[in-house]
Length: 157
Image 1 (tube, rainbow, N blue to C red):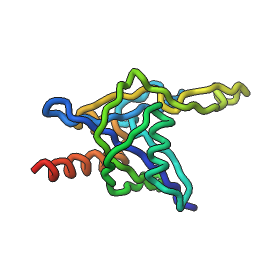
Image 2: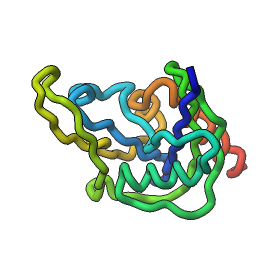
Image 3: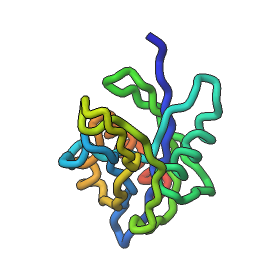
Image 4: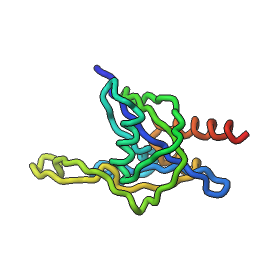
């Protein structure tokens, strides 16, 4: 089985003494009632050999409606339980979650109904301090938060 690759952006900001990260909640009926351990960084798949940072920036824009630019911090890739490899970059910035504009996808819903419905890829975004973010984010992405915190701590000392 071929490895799948995904790339994303971990947007962060300082709110007083707190470090906050922007996470997104997946859209669609499967995720509607899920909250803890279901949020993610904005990310998406890209083909082998493609520019991963360009893919991460494109996916951030597609899932949030916002562009990011500046100095990116490369984080260590994380392998997901599915085998997918996520490459991620952190960048300091700000975004108003109420301005979220996500692309959408179609799927048969309800199952076996023959009806196609459209759902947003991301149904909401929210800023979380690291304590809450660790409870909200998918477990396979937890190392991204840990590395961001360690990296910023080293830079500030």
